[in-house]
Image 1: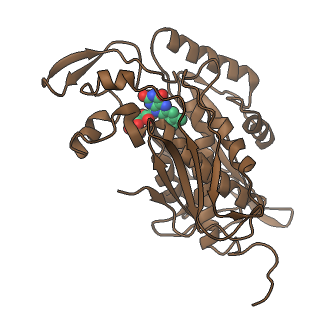
Image 2 (image 1 turned 180 degrees about the vertical axis):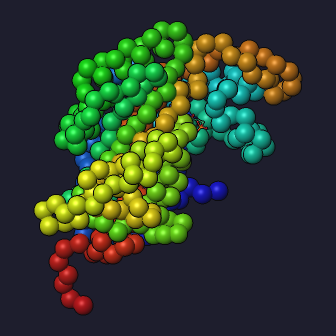
Image 3 (image 1 turned 120 degrees about the vertical axis):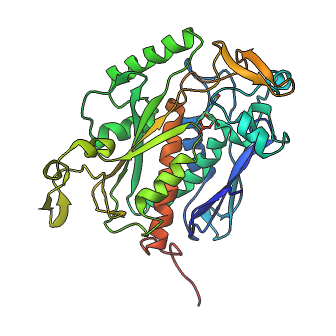
Length: 367
Ligand SMILES: Cc1cc2nc3c(=O)[nH]c(=O)nc-3n(C[C@H](O)[C@H](O)[C@H](O)COP(=O)(O)O)c2cc1C
């Protein structure tokens, strides 16, 4: 069991999809960080279900900041945040608890926990747990903002439709802030159409999220096993539905020559930089000072209305299944702030461990 992640800046997640709440505890956040509920709420609002192409589950996701903050600043203790689940309907799961959904965690969870797992909306395997990640990530983002570090993301592929243009950090930042799917408006519309087509057929589509971490100092990462890439990959693979991660040119590097793949060093504004960034801002597991860029493949939502094959675990026979309940036709769209949140937690942890973030922020009185 491991519901905690990170070494010095550490988050622990708790709750279930159809239980009372979901939440997060952050430990190791320096004292003195200005932090208010609105900092967390802003990020949660970007992840919240709703909108034309989203699940019909309506959650307001109002965060409660229960501990770790005094007078608008962190006090050095655990920061506890939660949102209550309000729009819970377990009917479909009660009626179908012996039919594991294809592509979902139901079957292996049933085996691991001897049938005592929370079958209602998959319990803690649910995408709802990503609200917890976003809460922890919001604290990390706030902390990173003091060093000028920004974590931004958007969608670069939905189903077969790919973003074909180069887009700059500023365009992505604007998209990140206003919750647009893709930094390019035209491509966003094509993405919407692709999702709509799948939804109409009772089906779902996957997608690719691109995330960029900007203004990072060089030399962040803790080799051997907690390299910047290793930690981010670990964190990102904990997001339900994620099936692939690549840094920089990623899998494309395998078909390049060294002369094409290497990023030449240059001096820009008195600093060492690289003229290209095919390594995605990481060499030897350490940041290079260039933007850290990675892409995350998110599979199509497993729960679909289309008929599929499954088994009845009581009768031990095959049975057809068409999934009811309320599900997003494309989870990649809602995964953007989640991927950003996980990246922020990883980078905050590595920056604290690397001595780039002080243990206490602001004035010190007395000894
Ligand atoms: C934001 C978000 C929302 C999700 N919503 C749903 C959903 O509505 N229905 C569903 O079947 N899966 C949903 N998932 C994905 C499942 O939780 C996930 O596929 C499942 O737990 C199995 O894990 P795996 O795909 O990582 O193997 C969601 C994932 C995320 C990140």
